[in-house]
Image (tube, one colour):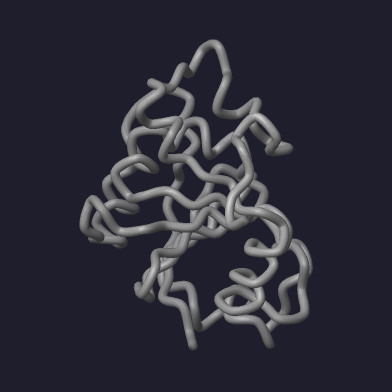
Length: 157
């Protein structure tokens, strides 16, 4: 089994928030991965050794300063229920149907598509503790920090 029901996901509350309701058609596209699939994806695309963004070092591409080329403040847009900041959208420049992975930790990864992420980013960013947004077969990456900033970069393979 690759996915678990959203209701069984530890952070499902972020997608059920009363002030940020999500249409059922979009909720169906937010797919938390099973622990085994999340662990595999994390080890393949994020880190073989570190379990959480708090522990990255320069051996992991997210901990390598060369990965990150810019940063942008996302918090004011989030506070005002605005769209995802243009700097992030322009940096990613992905097709609407690009599969994206919102990586919280080794055991917690959510799969969706770029269109759905953009429409529900306010909900996702309740979980902005160093979370990584990566695209399938894409090198651009964003790391959302709890400081209200996002680091923009390119994943080093």
